[in-house]
Length: 512
Image (tube, rainbow, N blue to C red):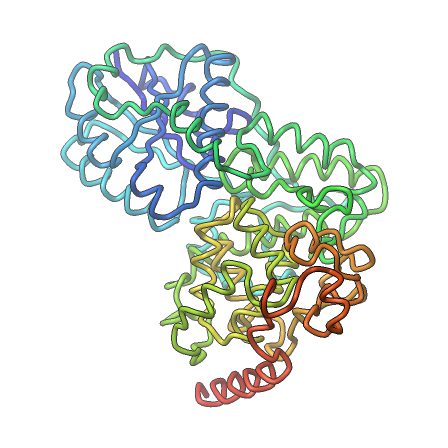
């Protein structure tokens, strides 16, 4: 009997999984082999423990769901996908007839895909099915290949694009596809696969137990957790969702819990494919249909449309992850790489408590509120440190639990001021915010800063965002002398900001 491989990549879920549905509906294979391939050594080089732990938890959860719902297990292998597929496809016992996987334009995914295609060129009887709209709301390839396509740069562009694809119903809602249910029946797993891939079997439970010893990650990976959070933060919070304005959410998390974001916290689950964007869209729409609600770009739907915009741009724009020959990036003459600046910024030792709290939170948990990301990226680039945005992008890519190639690059282009969709470059975030700041900090008690920068826990709130201004008796009373127990500000923020804006302006002039 023929076997169809279900190559799980960016959809670690059973709900609304078109790859799973099409593979089980196919008449060209009678057996299945649900497969996830990771390269442990590569994973270690590119990610920190929080991301790896989230992935492992997601895979263990998916394996349990496969067993409970479909009566089979998920085969998790460690090694290069090229070697593994070469081994699988060269074995006649398995009779591989087709391979199903999700569409992706991430560079690593494209590289692995191309390796598979080279192998399949020698096995012409095996068909590769790349399934679209698994982790996006639109068919990215169809959109960018239309003759009339123009890369979207604004929310108005995205609303026009959505209206063309999904005409609105009588109530004014886009006719987005309904999420798919979990299949009610499965196919048997190919019997001979263990002998073929025995050298690649990965003991993920053992690896996770080692990671858990040191991890401080707040988010637990997996579709089960994603659905719990979806219910808790969206489905059962109709008023919150209808009034949701992302720029108005508090960047310093909930006062009673420094680890719980005021936003939904669903982005890690979207990033790993534990949650379908369609399911989030539809659950949000259910809330909207019951009364007045916010609109894009600030609304929940608006945020999903921004996500879609960056997905589309990442495919349409050459060199999306570079400032060279990138039509969406002004090639600003940034300063030379400064190791000291980068280390102080990354380690939360800049002497600016808000910036340091955000960077320490990122390191410990893999999470940061979007306004915190705005502040630290502005600080690193056009604001204070004049370092290249790609350097910050790489730190985020390694540490963020919700890191996503398309979105991470898009956001750094946006926040460094180099993209056509950026805010004006001369609008800088104050790294020493107060309660009136657009960064939406809780400044009265400043518990967020006290939690993440415990050196300052006894400082009066009046001085906690600029502790170097506190008189010596107050520093002594708080048992934290600036310059000894906590760093002096690494730069004069106002002086360097003025210098950097002049550099940016001069660099722009030379581009014309």
